[in-house]
Structures are given as C-alpha cells and as structure tokens.
Image 1 (cartoon, rainbow, N blue to C red):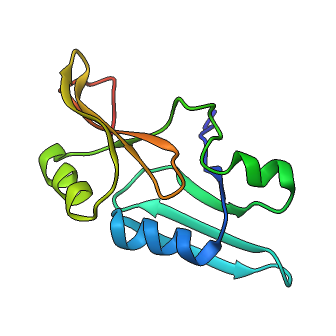
Image 2: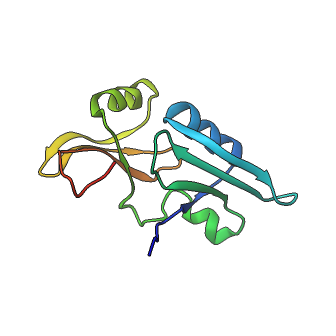
Amino acid sequence: MDLRINHIALLVHDYDEAIAFYTTKLPFDLIEDTRLNEHKRWVVVKPKGIGSCSLLLAKASTEEQKKAVGNQSGGRVFLFLATDDFDRDYRNLLLQQITIVREPSDEPYGRVCVFADLYGNLWDLIQYHDNPSIEI
C-alpha cells in the first residue's frame, strides 16, 4: 500500500501575496496556479527538493475561514520545514525579515527554530540529526 499526504490546505487572505511570500521569501516553487472560476484558484506551492508535501493555498471565503487565517492550529506550531542546511535557511529567514518566534536551539532530534509566515502561522525549521527513520 502506498499512501501519503499530498497537499495540506492553508487558508490565505490573498492568492498573489501568499504566492509571493512562499516563492520569494521561502524556498518554495509554484507548482500550479489554475483559475477554477471567477473567485477560486487551485494554487499549489512546494518546498524545493524532492519528496515534499505541498501546500494548497486556499483563499478564505467565509467569515469563519477569514478568522482562521494565520491560526489554523490554535497558536501551536502548524507546519514543519525540514532542511539539509539549518544555518543557510535560518540566515534566509533573517535576510527576508521573517519573524522568528523562537531562536535556534539544539534538541535531541535536531536543530530547530520557530518562525511565523506572513499570516502568523507557526512553523518549525528543523535540521534533523542523522536518523535513518527520519527522511528529509
């Protein structure tokens, strides 16, 4: 059996500002941007590299969805971005003036920091220690 999570829907206020953030401030590629109707697009971004789950940028359309933008996980870290070079990617976060919520620390599983995306969703940037059961 071959099952995997393909996309995670991430609520956004605006397609174009979200695309710009992920493709210019973070190392993501725009995989697809297809207009479905006058108000809805199918927008997929994915971290550069192989084997990554992608984000489906979903424009909030109801008041309830609009309230959830930036807080889909109730204030907890929501997404985890694994890297093969923590220092390089941490420097990029600083260069891009991305909000660092928790400074880098060394944990039993690897080096990690917490940052916020353009809407305030919390992310871990992680470089895992060598562990054959964890794939980047």
